[in-house]
Image (cartoon, rainbow, N blue to C red; front, side, top):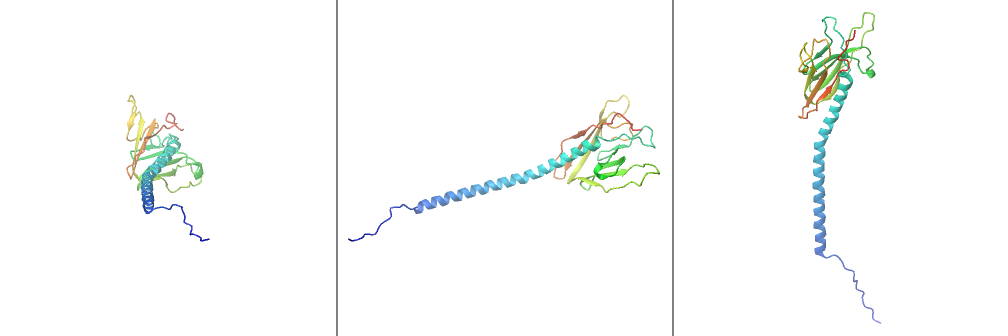
Length: 206
């Protein structure tokens, strides 16, 4: 019996079909690449905003903890005035340093902008001849990359005057009712108004 060669009936891809598949695959790859680039650019734009929001939150926390706890301690060399010096770009007041610093006692806190950095420092107040020598620390950096800061102070400047926002607050017998801080970063990002109310605005430490 003569044997005939078997022929396969399985269908294969034609050249046209292969070209169509390659073209569709190329379009898919291009689309995914474009989507990846758009996502990367959006993330790059979002990162600075996220960092700024975090820094502003830290500054608001500092205002809530330290400025709100300012102590209206009288000055020994001025009649009816307290140790509080509020300027447009800096503020100084009496308070207790954070416990983790291990300083103890009342200190004069200074908050100001130095070389695009918001710095805070604590100067110990005199405690008497028998007190141990106070410890001084280097200034701490609260924020970096800052273009400008602006403080304002809400209160009554004189008898019979209505309370208003003021650019400065010094040589007063009491603390301002409110303290406001506005921050502009070097990249132009602006903070929301950070407003705190000193809790001891009505009393003096004797």
